[in-house]
Image 1: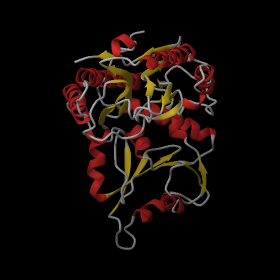
Image 2 (image 1 turned 180 degrees about the horizontal axis):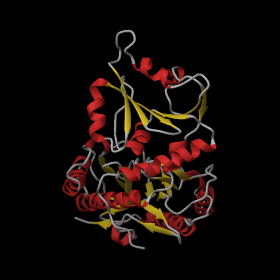
Image 3 (image 1 turned 45 degrees about the vertical axis):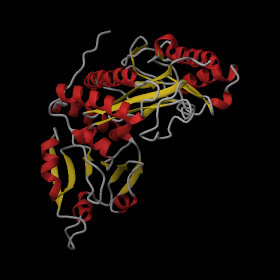
Image 4 (image 1 turned 90 degrees about the vertical axis):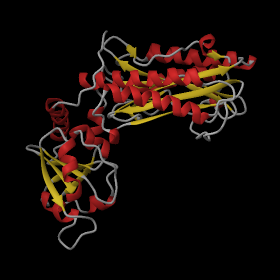
Length: 386
């Protein structure tokens, strides 16, 4: 299966296809309108990225006709510049504003008391209060986002090439005594340079580049934030992560590595992690229930005696963010399907010794799965000496 990287902005037709899928679910749920406040969902349907602040942007989706964008006067030209679909602009003056010129003064009249309105679970209470009609909490747009279009897959493939470049730089720089800030600066610069060369009109509002290495003294805690001048330590395991959102598409790659030598106790634990990882890839097939993957991978670690050392799920979805539906986790009873993009990252963690985890961005295909990120994986490839 050959998939080509894409860097072009979404076409009007691409955005139209996404909207059609949203409206199909609106029809099934008998909704007259769907209201989106989430910046990621608004970006998904319009290509306009915003940051939530005191001036709300609200996208109102009628079951037929043109989308309506409620936005402040100050930002209206910004929306018009970035949006790549037809929008009716419902503009308010400012917030706060004189009586009659606030966002809710133009928002409330968009609905009738008898309308059935779909709302996101993340909608702020203040906007919910001003939404007339009968409201129904339903995450329609998130549901549509789970299966990627060919265009989205191409954009994700390109984003993976960017994080591959970041991981390559990370592995070049990570040596005993090197401070984290040096590694961070180098890999971010490498990723930004590649992204800017290949996407000259990149939207930095929809882009983020990051990465770090957790030395063995803290790698048992994978979400702790290392201090900038913490130095790399001998031995291992050190856990590394490189993640990016490249012009609106989020991906990641992670590796467990060692410096100067591999401690004796680490070899067995690394092998157990890799055994769980191999099983996850074997199970990641269309039709497999997501929680079943997590359950069986966990059992590998439990059988080895490490049940208490499992602190997170086997994987999560990617799309226009770096963490989204679906989840390879206990409790997610959906089935894998072609077009889903997920991480495969089972890990085990030992306080005082460190953590073990590789992660890749993986596409579910008609026949199985395809790894979209690439870096060394085997223990002997991940031992680095001065």
